[in-house]
Image 1 (cartoon, helix red, strand yellow):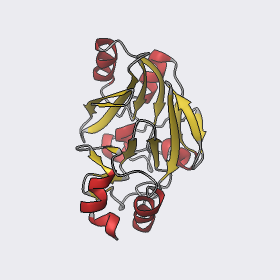
Image 2 (cartoon, one colour; image 1 turned 45 degrees about the vertical axis):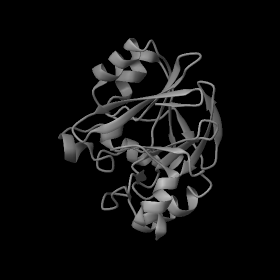
Image 3 (spheres, helix red, strand yellow; image 1 turned 90 degrees about the vertical axis):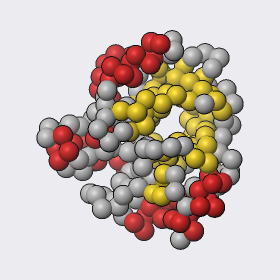
Length: 214
């Protein structure tokens, strides 16, 4: 999939089929890796196959299925990791990130760059806005590539629904506020890249997602 100067490729990884995205600048081949949740070999094979140059990891939140390959990728490419400043406790706590419950092993990871709500920054030639979207976890973060019309939503917003709110630090009221208010400025034709399942657009979600009508 292409969006402006961005090429979007996906590796579906791990037992719960997490979408790990490679967001690549078509001109430079620099790429941002989003939520490397497992299957390091699969991710690295895609990087080699497409001749990509990883420059950073973006984390939408700290659950195990979005972070298990982070350390391997950082070790291989010496790149920084970005996350919401409110998510550090989830990343570091094996009860909050669910690694102990779901894998039987304790796992934690720390970001190198913690972001604030509304912070803008540049990676791989893309201008990115960090939008704090608590609800699925207390420090959920969406990433808006306004020029490319791409919104990375993690487990905050899926096609036709929203993320679970029956997990540690989750809150239904917060996730409704996040999708209805925090994502309100995102244009209708922006591509939505969720943490699981098919991509969508904000326009489609506003028309068909019952949680955006709440």
